[in-house]
Length: 373
Length: 91
Ligand code: SF4
Ligand code: SF4
Image (tube, rainbow over all chains, first blue to last red; front, side, top):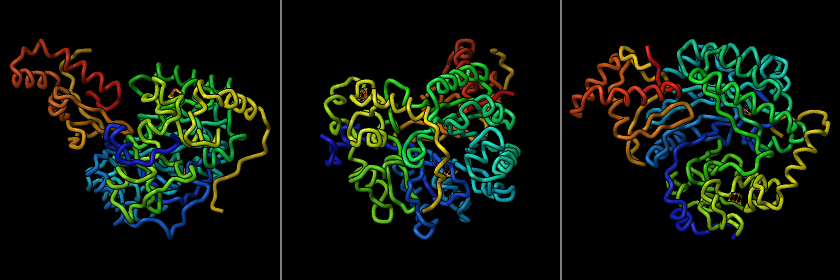
């Protein structure tokens, strides 16, 4: 079938979903240049960013739709001077405000203002578990010491802290060190997220992809730490896909739980959805969030099951993994409506495994750092 | 671990609120949402960082006309489970 063009049908088929979480890319500006950044290769300019009033309206509409948690992300959200007002607008709408930051440009005074505005939680990224790796991956010399100082301020203020580490070949042997870092700060939660290959990460795949043995070692370390630290540190991990047998339920299914808003107000079913050609996204400047959620062509496109090919549509896992990730299907097969090739039932599955093996042994010179073109 | 003198408290960053869009109540925590049933909500509405487990159990027993001994284990198991998930702590 390829793509669903009847929004009402798709909405009914997916069980009239109510969104839970909304990721807001407040800006694409960022002082770091991580080579796996999930922002698109075409970064949005500052002049196109939504203003505070627009964000506050979006928060109110989101709350009315059923959204509970908002993730204030970027780029680096603190690159916006009005972040405090944005946090306040989020809390005024009754939403849970989670700040996702690189933590290199927020000083104590600003953090206190954010806290006063009602910030609920801070998620801080670490590119490496030591200064050298963090500098290499983020392309900022003193990023590590800045992040360390920021983590201490967060905990000192009593705000709950999550450490986030995106894992790839340059830091995959540091799993235990990342966990030690989280414990040292008194973080309650750590996310060990293996890089997912689209956008910048796809451009850098050959430099980022770990070997299968490394990946298995990393998974075992996470398992061991989880058992050891139960009740002290919550360890969530996003398992690397290329070595798996079935795909993840990407976003828990297209248009079922999540909303992603770009700096300019475009609303996407997931942050990588713009890599799929031919989808029509609606903008909060022209439509209410509720209309976009129910009726926009991009949300309808892969919602429910009737867009699926025969393989997925007749499979009893179709409402478990919803056919996997559309962006990954596109990146690896050239067709966004294909079965996610991570699935062992996909005819492209072998090729994915081969690619994972080949790229992880290929020697490449360095990263293509994320920066505006 | 069923020491009833312990006092439970939701940790910072965890909030209980109504969920009108889906119905019922939820516990919002960092990157997760716990859906509460009626009993969970009744228990948590008594968790304020002041009342001990013993007081909470007594209050629930009075409200639902049950024997404190009969409900204590369930209440403790529920709250210990939340503590393990790091949304609640005891002092
Ligand atoms: S992944 Fe790195 S470059 Fe991208 S927004 Fe986050 S900190 Fe900035
Ligand atoms: S065939 Fe499709 S629905 Fe079945 S497991 Fe594979 S990806 Fe999931």
